[in-house]
Length: 111
Image (tube, rainbow, N blue to C red; front, top):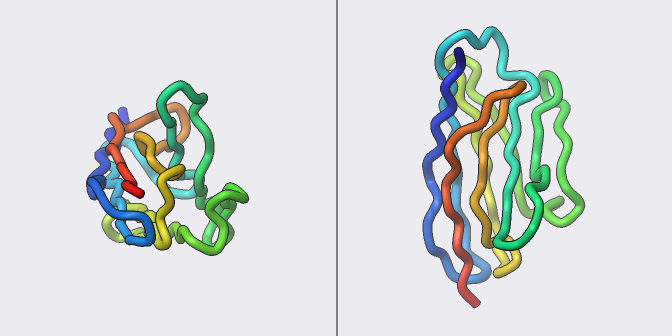
């Protein structure tokens, strides 16, 4: 079993920043493949950023240049630094690894 716990969501004005954290525990041997997804009201869940392996990452086009995913292997933790936030970034953000999902953290960006 693997547990993923997100934190760091909240309300921020457009142009502001937030940093999300996802702490993994349990039977996880590597955080390669861990990533962030989001789901806005009435929309499908979509990939935001994923650590593929080592320093190789993948980002959704809509967040490139604004969001940065990073990792702390010693803490089994992945971060998502979100800058220049836009109202359209409003969503519940979920951490994912393999078939495991966190419960999500709400990010609300006001205009």
